[in-house]
Length: 347
Image (cartoon, rainbow, N blue to C red; front, side):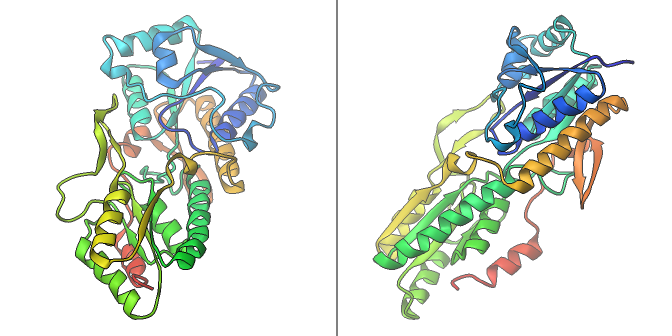
């Protein structure tokens, strides 16, 4: 079949490098004589219809240097809406979109797989700052996020030392601790807590006390938002609300830790939640390049009619894998790396 018009959407949270992907898709599609329609606000825009925009070369000039996504995003799950998948199919036909590129994480790509199963020509591009998506070595946005988080920890060392404080830094990461481990080790955090292993609150307190005895007047604790104390059954959450993919809104582990630490050590303790700072701002050079390469590969998959595939980085090579192999199984921090991290516990 001849593809004349490609649709592109971004789903889930924004990630530095998204605009690099979009730019690369438009530039590469143009070389192959294809138009690109930007679907505004992710699955929400495609579900509701009427929110599409022709992306031309002037539209995407220099956008690879900026954060966010020029076509917007949402956490809408079409499968949760009455006849949602059917409505998406009809809107793709309405705008004469011959193939769709879905840029997103596990949830977004899960919808893409369902569309592929329904006969829609779709390819995927992996996106998550958590770097927890299977079947690709790295996802764009991760590098920028760890640099932001590392800089934050670097800066906190001086203020913590000046005030003889314990500072607890809460970093994004629901199920996987790649961000927290990497930024924590690079930034010299003295305690690092990940979702992969429940932690003992008493061990955290004792480590801080040992530092106090050794003459260290401050401690930096890096904790993933999805880290869970051993005496707690589940995530620490902000409220009971869930999004359309069934995810609770995480937040509060840093605050809980800070209260316990101050009470049991007697040392003034403050928490800092980095939150969306990790998503914002200009992408790093690595993320610009990775996003660009993924965008180029996505269009090549369409040209080669390899639908149902996701662009993937393996080593330094750009390849592809079936979307179904990339979803449903998260890439967690491996035990060897966690053991290496523990060598620096309290140091």
